[in-house]
Amino acid sequence: MAQTLTERSQPAAQKVSFASGVGFVVANLYLPEGHDPSRRYPAVAVGGSLTSVKEQMGGNYAGELARRGIIALAIDYRNYGESSGAMRQFEEQASKAEDLSAALRYLKKRSDVTGTGILGICTSGGTALYTAAKDPNVGALATVAGFFSDPELALKMFGREGIDNRIAAGRQARKRYDENGVIETVFAYMPNDKSAVSPSPSEYYMDQSRGGSVRAWRNEFAVMAWEPWLAFDPLAQAPHVTAPALVVHSDGAAFPDQARKVYDLLAGPKDLHWIEGKHFDFYDQAETVRQCADRVASHFHSKLS
Image 1 (tube, rainbow, N blue to C red):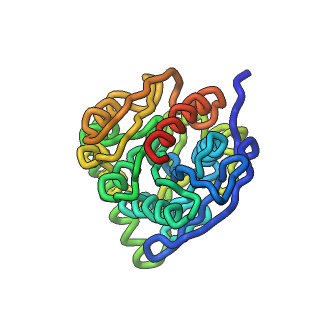
Image 2: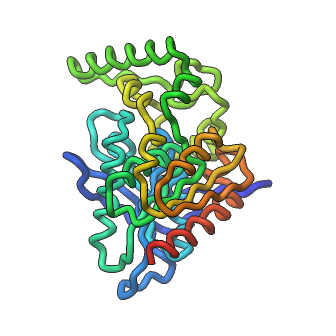
């Protein structure tokens, strides 16, 4: 039987918080085993999938990177988990990219840090490109099973009518929020539910022994976020990314052709690491995560030390 990683299987973490925009981000900080404050280590901010919280796949990777000699910070984006924000479950890339920048600023202030980078898993793989395209504190980045959308992919996923209907619903939901503060939501993940963001099997989230067991996670997507979510276009950011980049993906992960496109568009030193595995294997299946963590840690040690 395959071994599954959980928050309990990771090293102990320290809860920290820091300013971002007009609010704050809460994160779990993982220090390398035998951490020596007089030494300096690579430091990496880690973000997870759409609607995820720091106790899910972000924490799994942060803990594994700490085991490999890297200071790692698994974050809750604003409007999610323990972080600030009145617009709960609201998906907006400019805000999330700023949260990753804020995490890098927090890490950079530490006296035990040599250089700072970003690891993005699934949707945060795309978000990391938004940050890396603008922020010089991104000394290196890596993506694992990244979700890299663009307008053409959104059209294939939802159709023209589906996009128009979602944008209209989103604008109406935003109007209701502005008028009375009510946040209308749909499922983020729900098999066979066409109103959900992802109607696919989504076994990681449906399984109460896996991602679905994390109390802080809410299977909700704010309807008013449809317009910014459908505008998510990390492919447009990739040509502006010059930091050394590692793209880890597989034919079984989400939209592998998009990952190849991103890799081709990246402007700096880059490496494409193609392995075996289904998409959700990259979140918590021990063998897959550890294999990825080995490669990702090697990348960050070589680029940030």
